[in-house]
Image (cartoon, rainbow, N blue to C red; front, side, top):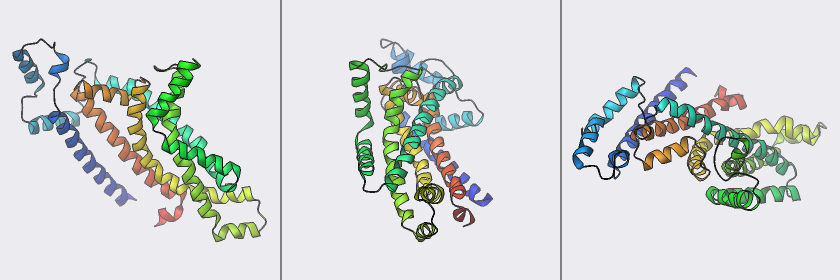
Length: 306
């Protein structure tokens, strides 16, 4: 286990290094810079050059990168060039909002997807199975931005039940959570159904049936745990999908999370904010995949022993 964690830790360091280089250089090579956003549009070019010099943007890109990495290593995260707020304060406020939205979406997708997948497998080819699979196809096929617009049109414009945007009450959370959880619920349900059907056809299930165990005892107590392995493996990848979708969902619903902040910072060329939160999202995905691998051993001891 120690050697495994050491290898994964080294891999994580390499990924973070490559991600930091990619983010840093892509920002510098993109058109525009902070002076075009922070300063008055009528400011003289001499003033803009002085501002760039103050930020160190006139130095070679390699020098800028090593200065940024050294500051980051010392825990100096920097401040926003646009608002003047520290990165720590932005992380505390926007990170909390994203965590609330993300955990709500993940919890909802598993709370609905797992039971429906088990039920569809247990009632294979029945009306319940057909309806569940139909809902799964719609959930996987409908783009999340389109679903968001439909929900806003129905529940905000027509019925006036829910606010179309804003934060941070329970009513503001409902529609973003539904949109963010839609595809994850559909994927979880379909994978759970397939995994359950695969295990229901194995010999140990026929043995349990021959012993007289009830169908629900076999499904819930014997098959369910083994069928969770593909779901666990998918969970690490789904964090990456969730982060990508969060950028869209938070922007549409004006939910002040990390995704909304990151999109706004890119448009404003707020270099410190973009660099830190981009790396934070990459780190989150990498750690999520590591945790998914570790949970393998808890779900299936054979993997741990191997």
